[in-house]
Amino acid sequence: MSFRWPCLPAVLGTWLIAEASAWACDSGTVRDAAFSRQRDVHRLCVFAAHGDPDGDAIAERLDTWLTARGDAHNLRIERVFPDDPEVTWSDYGIPSRPPRLPATALIGESVPSGNPFVIGGWEPAPEDFDGLLDSPARETIKAALATHWAVLLHAPELSNQSDTSDTSESEAIIGAACATWAEKQPPGLAVVRLQRDDPRERIVCALARIPPQGPDWLGVVFGKGTLLAPPLTGDDISEDSLNRLLETLATPCTCLHQSVRFGLDLPMLWDDTITERALAMSTPVTPVTPLVEDVLGAPPHIKTAFGRMTGLLALGVFGAAAVSGALAWGIARRDRGTGS
Image: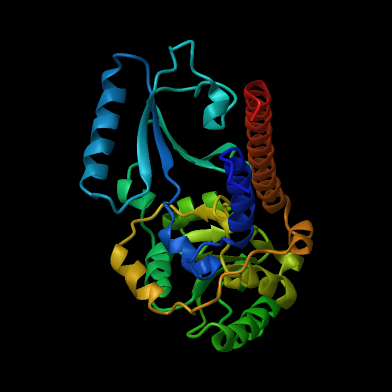
């Protein structure tokens, strides 16, 4: 029996399914893979009418300041003209034009919805440009990510800020997690305390939605300064819930994880030498493809990614089969017509 070219699409379709079901990224764990992805870029928007000299001056000063930081930042300046009827204010996370112009706002995108929200706003502009990308907590986080597997960012309730006795319930949970993960993923976790009432931490608190007053807040930071979603607050802080968050980072990275955003990157300067030092601590893993039952129990955004991938594969196979069938039918007609 001779090999027929019409069979080729079907063969390719079968190969595509086999490869897709077996393929997984080779980036180690989710934590390790985070060092190879592009950071979230937050928009630094200057709102001023066309020809407004004050707005132009603010944008120029911000651009000069940001350019001096090379590629180490994750901000992008955007000029917004409120007198332009084409402006859609919901694209900036606000209901309408700012009440006073010029104005400046730092805009991020929520996870997992991707909806824009205002991290910080100023009239007309921030006085301290460096505070957009730097603060005591962020400097400590960067240093810790270079020497630890991940970071626990803790914003205690203000009444507990001066408590250094490690007797609070949250601190006991943090201590237990540090002991556990020092064995699971050496060298384990670093703990960074966030002073929620420090004006220098305004950007971090706004992005993480940490109010000035409120219960204990606990988040996990990994990769290039990514705050893992969701953080824990108040009674939700438990050893089990914290370990579940950390287990997410220890999961072998698969094709299913490639397009998933596990958190939101802090506005922060980043040095690639930190990446090199951090990856030196990576634990080799064997990439695996998630089982169907694992996907069924996964969060909604994981299920969506899996569903899209499965749909694309099904569409590809259907297309291959249709082409194969059409070509085979055409060749059969030709053979009957020629009497072969």
